[in-house]
Image (cartoon, rainbow, N blue to C red; front, side, top):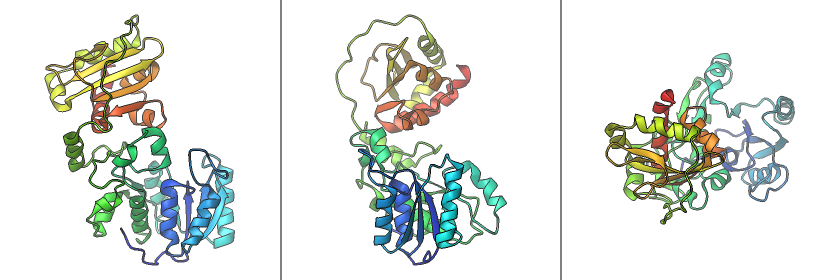
Length: 345
């Protein structure tokens, strides 16, 4: 773990989403230095599934040595943001550090505020265990994640840097390696267990990929055949599968080596498969000839949008419109394949 240095003592940190998860972890890390923390979040009352409010976070922050200012803020409401900033300035003076959720703003803001405020984006290399991940990933997902502590340490590392360090897109693991951290098992929820690569990075660590592939599906896809269903009439899903099937080749099969099962609801739905293990590949209605590595459940409308490039699988998954069982590394491989096919659909 990255040790605290006390460098942030007296600094004011404005953190959106600090009532729980990653935001709160960053807040607590900075608070241990004696920093002032503005908790800008929506939650004022306890939620049955999501622990923490801006007030309970404030108590934790002050317990470890920081000062806290809880502010009710919905980041979609410009007036609420402005009011929170005014309250922060009134209580602590001008704030010196901010956490933003819009990485695309980094380059423009870094140039606009050059010499005054450093603006950087921070992203995890692997999935981070939060309450939201539990809700989306289901039981057992935590064993494939790292703790929020890795993001807190990476953010702390950025906070210590001079204003000249700006306009950067930082990966948590990379910046901590620069700090001399070598043992990353300390950040794992279950040390030694294969980790899910972050959904929004184009590439993911080769050792992680090899671990996931060597240990197979996590969690396991349940054995047993699904109940047979009558084949739906010709529609968008069948047309999509025809185009996908025509796009298959030995090279695609060799590069993927996975079988996907799609449980689709709505018109033209039912059980469909994409076999990228058999020679030449195969796709169509019904069940594959062998056990599926990945099962994806969604509506037929979302399926068509996903394969035509109008809906990113990662966004569908994170919003709950797509549910995935099985090997997440192979699920990510399918997204890359869909990007190649979308031009034909």
